[in-house]
Image (cartoon, rainbow, N blue to C red; front, side, top):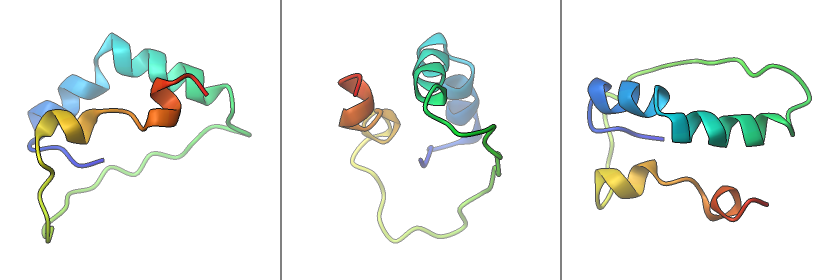
Length: 64
């Protein structure tokens, strides 16, 4: 997932909606995930909008 800036990333990480999505998905994990935050220094294409870049994939949104 790519965010426009760090503030957008932090806001998403702290949102109750993101926490709920994570908890639903975490039920399927075999173990605890490893987190590797990074910074993209080059991208050849920008997302159409920040909102579109932050939407969960359809299979998560549909509750599959």
